[in-house]
Length: 187
DNA sequence: TGCCCGATTAACT
DNA sequence: GTTAATCGGGCAA
Image (cartoon, rainbow, N blue to C red; front, side):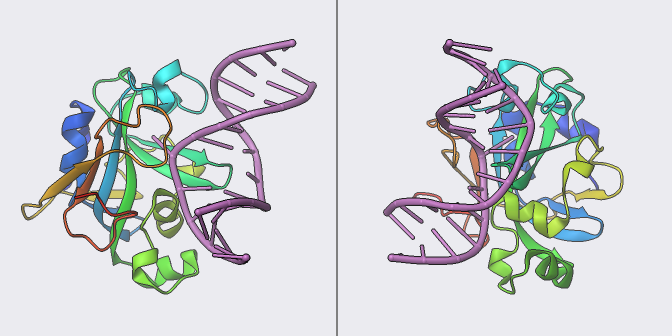
């Protein structure tokens, strides 16, 4: 079962934990999402907090689209836009358990260790070949494919990583016990 | 226009 | 543990 736009047209705090365990492929390469973070437009840490700009325009559009931005001038990071159009809320994909296209991902990343392929938002984009070229593309059309969870998963919650505003909000979600998290969750 | 800083990563000591 | 790489957004002047 693949995910469609309706899946994303709900509150971001509801969608984010449900993305843990979902399989993401880009151009036939990817794996199971094990870590995400939610960003809401009323949240000082969100790019959309200060209103629309050319960079974050996709966040202000309809749900079910990819928002890709450049991080620290070096890396790409990918978000899935949620909620009704205009809410400007999205889920950052922070880590994936690589399952499909291991050889392609190893070549793109230049590392052999499977645990280092997709454990971090910049690493996910490099391994899956996501760049500015995918900004604004629909998540239910090629090159994107999203497969719904097939089993129940246990999701753990904690504060988000790498931000300086709204640090206390527990809007990071992870797959319990996964070896592929970007950082461990505090017990 | 200029300056500071960031939803990061890898390579250092 | 610290720091360089590298650039666009946001804000002050």
